[in-house]
Image (cartoon, rainbow, N blue to C red; front, side):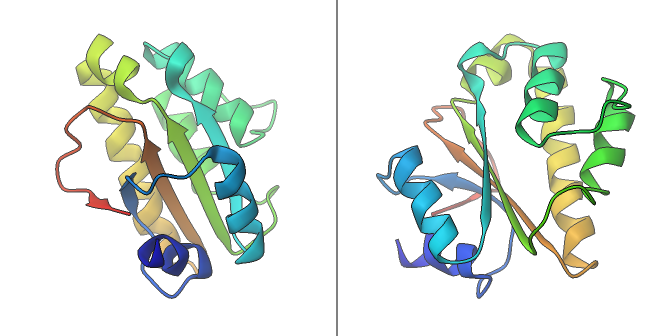
Length: 145
């Protein structure tokens, strides 16, 4: 739990993490608010392909109407985010397995874009992290919280 709080507080590096701490989404929302982070939730139960993922992330992060529903537009919006307030943003991706298993090549593209988003904001004075919750998928190279 200490590592989770450190990411939310900004005392630990933002990144892509597997969330193994037994915590409900509501508790995570409260904890995020307490420590000054903005949490956005993405329910992966209804996501099994690129189009569903793009629609869900656009909805979760309130993308502008001009969002083009493609990978380049996703990267553009994720490296803009001017419409969102806060210096520490967290995307909670609950149940990513469906997408990862149904369309593994597109899933890898999504992961790559999320990784590059984290890196982009590290150099631009804003923290962006992704927490993957409820995943049985092997998310290689991700630390656990």
